[in-house]
Length: 113
View (cartoon, rainbow, N blue to C red):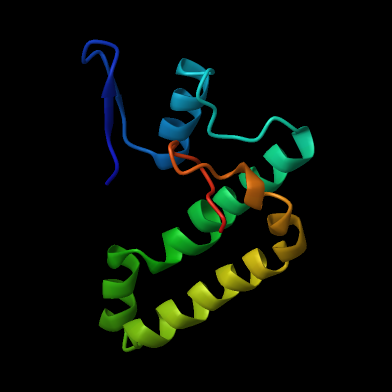
């Protein structure tokens, strides 16, 4: 589980999107998101496809349960990963416009090369 401990150890964040938003707001001089509202929205859409559509149904707890009820972990994961990838592919043209935003010396929410 991702964890960020900050603010002299008084803040502990354990959710990826909350961590990214905290870093975006805490360090505005090193933004994780593009400046344009449209580009920011595309990046947020992609982050949410992974965080809300793909990850919850392919985490180990769910995969173990699928196996316990007689399903195949691999088939389940493949199906839901493919659905998530299809969502990302549907944004492909918009992703291309973000390519120049990725800089090697900075961490970004999305880095497309």
